[in-house]
Image (cartoon, rainbow, N blue to C red):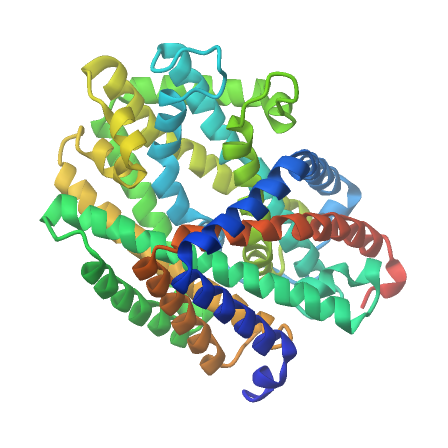
Amino acid sequence: MKKKESYKNPVFFISAIVVGLLVIIGAFTPEQFGAVAQTLFDFTTLNFGWFYLFAVFIIILFLVGISVSKHGKRRLGPPDSRPEYPFFTWVGMLFSAGFGVSLIFWSVAEPMSHFFITPFPELEAQTEEAARVAMGYSFFHWGISQWAVFALAGLAIAFLQFRKNRSGLVSAAIEPVVGKNKGIANTVNILAVIATVMGVATTVGLSFIQLNGGLSSVFNVPNNIGVQVIIALVMLVAYLASSVTGLDKGIKWLSNINLGLALLIMVIVFCLGPSVFILNSFVLGMGDYISSFVQYSLRLSPYTGGDWVYQWTIFYWAWAIAWSPFVGAFVARVSRGRTIREFVAGVMVVPPAIACIWIAIFGGTAVYSDLNNGTQIAEAVNEDVTVALFEVLGVVPFSDILSIISIILIFTFMVTSADSATYILGSMTSKGSLNPALITKIIWGVLITAIALVLLFTGGLESLQTASLTAALPFTVILLIMTVSIFKEINNKNSEK
């Protein structure tokens, strides 16, 4: 595809204009923008929270069913195709693009939040039973449910792109159901681009704050906007440099580094921390997760009231659904040649398993410390969630070294996520090209960093994140259409090429 064609594509300039307007509004009227965004988000979650829960549950059942069926042996590509990337690299890519940096942030913050304010009103906070429920619920939120959303989007895009020779756009994944309609296709793709830009920009911006907090705790670096600007510029240079090297070098090698570092720090903290307690809490937490899976998946509170489920479970599902076009498209791109069964098992089992182990090690260490050593990590997290990880590292030996490794890991995870986002945005705005023009990727990379910095300065960052989650409602409908598309195309032998 020629470079100039990106700018002739209405998806490119319409989405860029809309995002630009939202950023200007968020920068100059952050309070009003935040109020409107919160109102929209509250409306969608309170009125359609049941829809999110039901849709995600249906998606899980569909993916399990199709993977164990006779169709599970079919490949995402020609029948003789084989995977492009080794298993370790593939898992690293999945993990890096799909919330790796968010897991580092929440692996301590979430269980300690549930430990401090319990998911059930009748459950007393900061007790052994509260700790047990906190761990089980954290496993649930980072388990197969949110990854099923990414798997569904990725499977629909990958099967139609690599098996049926369609484009790698979100709109192409619903074409078998809605037909070829340029207006619908452009609208869906524009929504996908806007949701991706807003979601990635807010995550990048929050990572600047977390990195600054880590540097402040280890090296006494000032925690202010000036340092965050420097972090932003260093990160921008890093992920643009990675973007120049392409998918098979930059993202591939960064993903290997990410997974390697993550496994290294997990092993170190496990060995230095309360190892037996971590193992016990992991096994018990997995048991609670499995036994409570259906209840948690469909839990609402129409009789007792309360908004805990809306603040956590439904928020997470909206978050995953809003990100599904980006993560799904990237997962599809790196999964060519794998069987449907291997794809579903890999995406829905391996990253969630790593996530649960990570939470057991870091969250478990925090819980143990508060229960047995009288520390107040839960109180500290309640005051400021950005300190969660470094509070835990402070209670184990060699905390400074582990904090440095964690800072490096957060940085490399964020660079990989931003790099993969610029690649997917370039593809989305280049009619699904597998090799979008470098200038297009650079434009999106610079815009994402600029948006994050502008909103950091003006205090509108969290408002943009809230606004981005309203995209979950239309994308929930799109995901359900994708399930029908996959079922229809996988049984349509006449369309096989």
